[in-house]
Image (tube, rainbow, N blue to C red; front, side, top):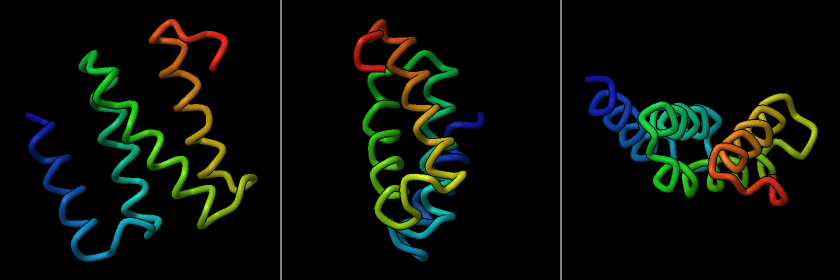
Amino acid sequence: EARPLVEEGLRGSREILGDRHPDTMASINIMASLLMKMGELQEARPLLEEGLRGRRETLGDHHPSTLISINNMANLLMDMGELQEA
């Protein structure tokens, strides 16, 4: 039941706020987290990559939100068994 709501929120954020708005990047992270919880790791990966790239570009490498994205990406890679890349 959660997935359609999260998808709707992300779609609305992209349309209204744009892809690089902090709220949109938070929505991207929420969608990726949901997918990870559902076991859809391959589907979550491009979202986490997009969110991390966007936060690095707009907030910088040391912003707390960027650091959260870095940790989320590392957790995904570990869950996927890509320990060297994590």
